[in-house]
Length: 537
Image (cartoon, rainbow, N blue to C red; front, side, top):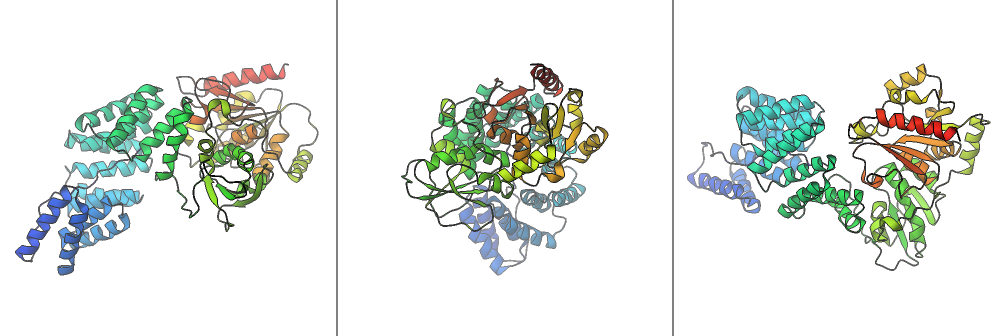
């Protein structure tokens, strides 16, 4: 949800002396003036004309590179700025701007090298410390990043960008009140600072100060009407508070955000208005496995309108989805697409059907394991001698909130003295958890046999209860209509809503939420008590 921010290089240095005519010097001064006032389209051809006359002109190369960066053409920007640095390798401003471009290209180790060189030459260069801090934060070296931002602020006390970045580092360290104060300082220094307003809203959201968060997102959008990140964050706030009417519409801003890969189709987007009887429509996944599992429930509703539904999903879900009611063809991402008339991302279907809390299509099961997989897992598990409980303690390690959502297997050990058969539903087991599995033989581990979600679904069908963190298996269990208890962070994903232990998307789900201590201890205690009560019936 957060918006990253590094120092954007703004040209302002006087042109250096160079062997050229007074006319070229005047042209450069004119280009710089235009550039400083944001008139990039007018400045660009002047820089280009200078380079046609003097191909190795340092200032024209450097500043055209800055301009390209501001246009989002970062590969070209890097080439230009590095060409300038070949002539003057110790030019501090160019080294710092090179670091900014490398940050945008996610080449963070190279950013560090460029900024460290700039700092070695000019130890009081605040912008280099700021860009260096951003790279360190992205490399998960957050304590070092915070120190770098603090140094930038010490050198330049009114440095709004550094205060914003400092807020993001403090946020990553879960020092939320301090992060909020840092964003507030950035906004005092620059009242119309859209990025800081957006980031401030995110922290307020995580503090569950929803009214203030909404106001902060509103201000960010008032400053920058097309601010996709702020619109998307506001959409999530509206959805988690049950304001689906406005939430779904604003959720479409995700498709204009760099956070997601937008698909460009010549066929029109269908959002419920056009007649689709007799038409072919492509419904396609766009995010994680859990999203696909949750929103494929809309496929039968689309089919009920007379459409021929083609469903494109991630390969591990393809076989499972072939049994979905109303689907004509299921293809995996990357395969050639058949002809179709309309298309719609799965996460836009709630908007197409104008879904409200009371109209969520919640009938389950809407997914079923293939018969062959079901027979295989029935035979593998054999006769049931006691209650079977499935466990999922970690999700996708690459998820931006993995640190919040996943727990260690060690945290679940208090459950293992309960008289039940525990079954791991983890397909991928992290090394530390593998060691715990080896030490405690009470958990059946089938990770090597879970080839696809069809296997996982068939295994779930043989269990009495699934206990899961917020990951795709929790969605799968809910879609299969199996009892699933979900462990949720203090600030959960929007789909779990707020302050309730049930969920309208999955009638078989029971939610166990962290309290304001934001630890899992009380959650595990509550689950243990609930399991004992369930088995005592």
